[in-house]
Image (cartoon, rainbow, N blue to C red; front, side):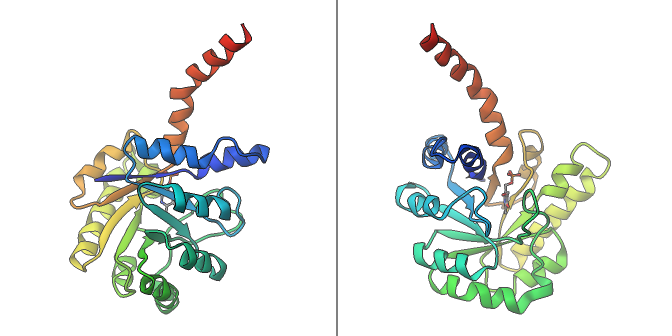
Length: 236
Ligand code: PXP
């Protein structure tokens, strides 16, 4: 199983001051040096974290693969067709949401999704659909021409350690098996952390996990001691 690291939160911190620090390019480099198989960024319609320029620079500097998360928006599709990331992951997007809430309703807009991804597939970009682990969504995804689904693990992550954990976990496991039987490759992500990630090994054939928040959160505490001590020695 491979790890894809989502670096959007690095851009969120950078944008809080409007400057260039911390650099998302440097963050991607460190993630790659430490085993990330791919780098994920979500170019949101409101550009609240990752900016167009970040995506262009990442395409030039990454030594692994860029996985571009995007909504069904024509201007973002245009950028994707221009830079040709290794893969795109189609997500639903609401302006007011804090993060991606729920999976894409592929079943409810099968024709629209199929049409939207067609030029991306024709350009040689691998397409993944971010969906809830539900049979109807999996079956619809298999009809679109996309090669991958990414199962939304948010509900499982929230249920982890509660009486609902097993039910949510089985939804993931069964959806993955169904998707694979229909010829889809399966990734997973959202809300995975250093505890709940362990059960992902119980799902046969998962290709990649895309993880952001827990890694960037942990990085603050694994790096804060050294950062304070370095500043302290400069002051002394
Ligand atoms: N996969 C998708 C499609 C996402 O939208 C996100 C969040 O941007 C992630 C994975 C990563 O989620 P988290 O930050 O909770 O690890």
